[in-house]
Every structure is written in structure tokens, then in C-alpha cells.
Image (cartoon, rainbow, N blue to C red; front, side, top):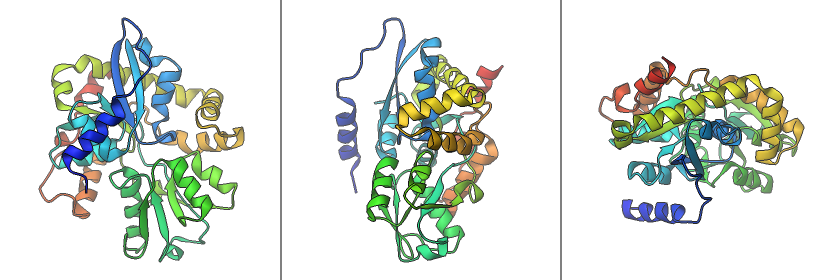
Amino acid sequence: MHTFGAILLMVIAKLVVPSVSFSQGLEKSRIVYASRGLPFFSAFVAQEMKFYQKHGLEVELIQMAPRIAITALATSQVDYSLNIGSTMRAAMRGAPVRAVASSTVAPFFALVTKEPNIAALKGKILGVSDFGGTNYQVTRMVLTHYGLVPLKDVQILSIGEEKVILDALLSGRIHGAMLSPPWPFEAEKHGFKLILKASDVVQFPFAGICTYMDKIKNNREQIKKVIRAELDALKFIRERRQENIDLIVKLFKMDKEIAQKSYDFASVFYSRDARIQPESARRLIALEKENGGIKDEVDVGHVADLSLVEEVLR
């Protein structure tokens, strides 16, 4: 297991690299996300459509594994994380981080495999992005829901971003995975099946804006700029189907048919107002407690600050 110091060195190695120069007059901000997939599409939309610039921000999007992203966020190495599930779980354990807005209302993973049903996955291997991420947690929850014991009945292998998981599926290294669009539809082209949607089993915030406590205390205006850009992006996603499909083709190097399927699958899961619903946060807390991740009682205010979105929406 990585020590805190070792993980911090990994964070610094990720961040101390040449990056594009920030435009003069715009406020610099670094945002991390777990993988190049539709869960984090709103951030890519905000950047491509210049919504961040509209609100006075120059944003650098950085791909980073959730467990490393938590350390980066908690130590102020980055400004924001979009990994809302892993961030809220870290907050439950005392990390000085909070979720402030939700981009999605439920996970939109699909379980992809060539097996006929979930029961047939017993004795098989599933791939996940990272053991600290929502992808892993959702995989465990779905397996448990259907009577399979994770890591006993079904082995779980940490592989990396979802494109790499897809490659592992195609090579036969693993037998299935929870993938978010567009990757399930790419897998379909190779004979895999989508045997269920994760949202049929679990519903809680899947992607959203998170930051550290000192920023909430000392720079609320910057956070609200990020939320405003997010709201613009969410509105664009809801209302501009064809332009979003074109963006998916461009960003994820997918053909148009897969991009259309991906948009139609995922678009219903994006939030209309970026609010974190207290009941959804409580559900995530309850799930973490059931899984043995926490023992003490945790209230919503310990994992999320709901006030910033309300200030923006006034």
C-alpha cells in the first residue's frame, strides 16, 4: 500500500510537467478527472465551448487516478476534482475536502461482458479503473446486489482508464467491466453485451465538482465561477444534441453511430441544476457504512457544501 508520502510524490510527478500557458487576465485553475469518458463530459464541454473563459477562468484538465487525486486535492496541489464519489468517501474519513456540485444524478456505467448474465461471472475477472474510484465501488455494489461476493466469487483487477479496460476486454485479459459511454458501445462492435445499467441498482452522485476546505473558506467566488461554467455546460448538453455528438466524436475518437448511442444513453443522467441532493448523499454514506468503510455517524455537511450552488442559482 502506498504511504501518504509516496502518493504525494506521485502527485507532484503528475503535476510538475510543462503545460499550456494560461491566458493573461484569467484566473488559473487545475481540475482533475478520472478517465476520458462521458461521466466527465461536462468539463470537456465547458472547455471546448469556452464556458470557463466566459466566467473568467483558464482551466487545465488533468487526468489522474482517484486515489492520487484525493491526495492532490487535500494538499491543494490541484484546485478541483470531478471524482465526486471518491472525494465524498475521503471526506467521510476526515479528509479536508467537500463536494460542492453534482454533474450527474446517477452512475451511468453499463456492465459489459460476453457472459449471458451476472451469475455466469462467478469465477471470472472484472476490470476497474482504480480501487479508490466510483467505478470500483459500483462494481462491488452490483455484484453484491446479485448475490456474488466481490474478490471471492469474482476477482477484480485495477487496470486504468476505461479505454485501457476496453483493450483488456478485447484481449481476453478480463471477462467483463463496468464501463461508461462511449466504451460499452465500442465493445458491442466486438461481440460484447450490455447486460445491465448500474443505475438500475444504485443511484447517487457520480461526477461533480469537489474542492478543499481552505478554498471554500477563502475563495468562494472562484468556486462559483466553476459552478456557473458547469451549469452552462449542462444546459448545452441537454439542448444541443447534434453538437454534443460531434464533440464526442472529436474528443473520444469514436464513430458517429457510437457517439449517438452514447449521447442518448447518458444525456438523461446529467443534472439540470448541479444541486447535490441530500438524500443521494445520505445514500452514499449509508452504502459506505454498509461496506465497512466507516463506523461513525456522518452527516451530509461533512461530505458536501450545498450552499455554493444555492448562491449561484439565486
